[in-house]
Image (cartoon, rainbow, N blue to C red; front, top):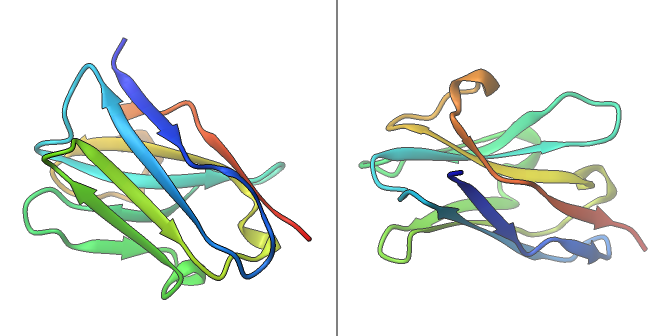
Amino acid sequence: QSQFVESGGGLVQPGGSLRLSCAPSGFTVNYRAIAWFRQAPGKERERVGCINWGIPNTFYLDSVKGRFTVSRDNTANTVYLQMNSLNPEDTAVYYCAARPILCSRDVSGYDYWGQGTQVIVSS
């Protein structure tokens, strides 16, 4: 079954950084917008960042702007989420997801998902 394989999560102290990676299994990232979502316990899943296919416009949740960066390496067939200045409110399971061409805030618009990687920000 086609899906993403995510890696890079873990425990980090407040103010620290992590880089998450997302590589598809069974398909390519070509012609797909790739988004990173997160879900904390008891909260709805929210999109933290997204990058279009083609013109690489990126979009971010207000609370992560200036701290998180989504990038893609189409040759390596991998998408990244660089997270800096992490704080405890960033603790969540992070997922990558894909949809055709353009980003969308709508969770239901994404047809491929990863299994999630846990990020814990704590001292």
